Length: 80
Image 1 (cartoon, rainbow, N blue to C red):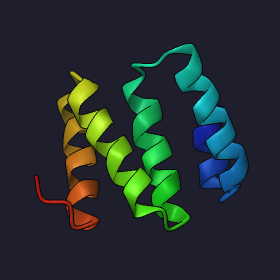
Image 2 (cartoon, rainbow, N blue to C red; image 1 turned 90 degrees about the horizontal axis):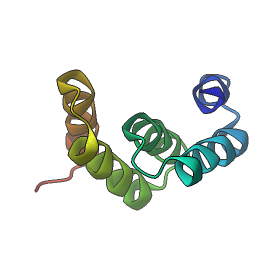
Image 3 (tube, one colour; image 1 turned 180 degrees about the vertical axis):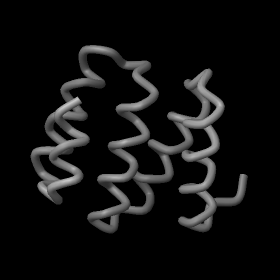
Image 4 (cartoon, helix red, strand yellow; image 1 turned 45 degrees about the vertical axis):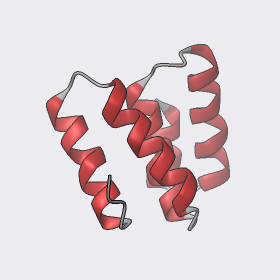
């Protein structure tokens, strides 16, 4: 996923564009939600980051990804 590469390069606008496109093509793409959440967190948009981490955690069957999303939610102060 190119969005992850853009995120690693701190090219947040391109990361968001790519991750948004991935989610348009595959609306239940758990990893795209997770990485878009990281992107939103990086630019200081906690509300959108929380929404994406919650979505990633609820969609995924991957226990590692679910735990990562829940860890990010905790870091952002989200209490279910």
